[in-house]
Image 1 (cartoon, rainbow, N blue to C red):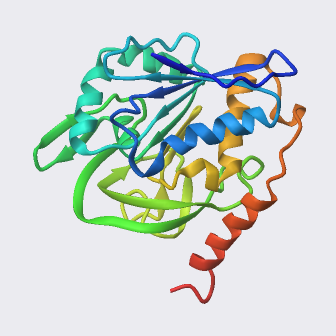
Image 2: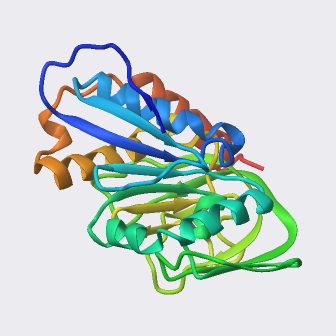
Length: 261
């Protein structure tokens, strides 16, 4: 494992351990930027963020993990990663059921479920969340705008990103990450995107997701801090998000307005 830690000095003893799973295989469309965003938003608050990259040949332990990132990759890379993760599925399930924070993007999102059916056969998932995926045609490619309705205090602003997936995901009675205002979402039919389960966010949104949506990043940080220390993110100095909010609103205005195509 490669421990990537900056040299900044921190004013308190709060530390979050972020585990980035298989960035050598799962890093489509700049997903590594999600790690950079979490580190910076911790740094601005005086929180030490230690990032551990776990590559395919590394031994994976979630004993000290506070946030886990599982990014996107091709079907072939997903299968390689899934075979590896099957060996520690119980550890992953224990982490999720204990409220551990996790962001799973695109291929990582699909791996959370029971299976992913492709023309080459069925890829057995990790069954961490009650969902499944089937490959469809054409690919669902679009900018996307969501509105979360289940966590209005934590996610008061629209969520924006970019989607590019052949899978159609069905989440059953689970809570979606958001309602689609523009774009395709999970399957192009039910106007839902992603899934929320305990401390897990599963989504098809690339971009990367977190720099475009600092409120989503803060939700992950808040859950991790409360689980580990019993403190609120509001107890720390708030960064100035005016530029990020302006950029977010520009995307929303472009794609979700009476004049949008």
